[in-house]
Length: 433
Image: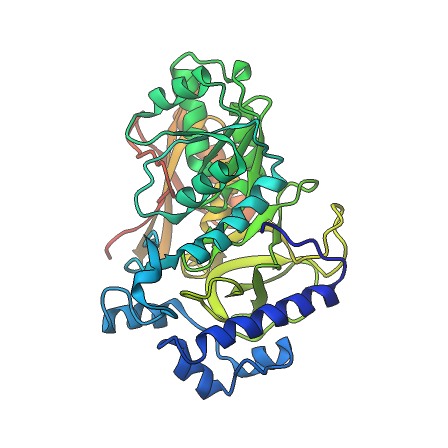
């Protein structure tokens, strides 16, 4: 399967309650993690509505999953079947806390690949495409899943691990690659490296860059920067997590708007207290909560993802879909927020500012303490052709002040001083007090 196309919210709810009943029926007696939780909540396969499920079933947190794996190493107790049925192991990227290990059965892997097929459908990827994966996969689930889904689709797939950026670029050009899957940060790095190597990407065959792993794909300034570096190519965002799989895909007609694949996931948006925003108004901000409706081997029910989103009001999208839409993609992580002199800041907001400065090759945000309060300092690495570095720093300071009404000190680093990233960028650094 890939995307189920619905005609109404009622059809979505009917589909989801049937999938939810089947999931609960599979796990309520066999899964040692979920059996006691379902019994305590008074939830079983006879549940009659999604409202009843939301009302009775408590939210699940990453801390609970981590505690379960700590208590029952190495994988915890979230298993519905005998261990021999599980064929794949992946783990989270550990951007917050230690990594979670996740096992999947072959059946669940096929279900997960359906989410990636929805991403490829929205990106208009066909068997005629040549797809490139410029990364060392490791235990990261996203690229393995994308790779298998692209193979299943019939694309010519080229691995790009174990070599440097320049070698990857030459392989893309030589093989007439049309689709690239990477993080937004690495899409920028590839584009900049092409210029350094004297490669003209306007003459390359790449027409689509599918990005994920961090919020930049739906940040207009970051998207525009990528598309400037890759003339003629379109950037398409999506997002997912190891614990849940590929959740969203970008609307084919509205850049920066992500559709939740509600055929695969029961989705909620909750406020800071965990209260469900059942009918979110346009622009309402909250945390995404997900139930995996087809990953029965190691499911999550009402899982607090930590992803902050702005849900659009219900209705029909320009593309004809009636599924939940997230404007601006993932706007940040709940645990990434920092408070600077009373202002709530997310890394994606600084990405948006920095993306408007093509003279900045890379940046770093340092969070320290000054007189007992959190303090933000920004380091920028100017390009060689940027001119007066001091003037650039002042312009960045003014842009931050205009956006946030904050005075932030910006200084320049020497060329090559700041690190480059292939997967998720780690530009925000918390200094010891």
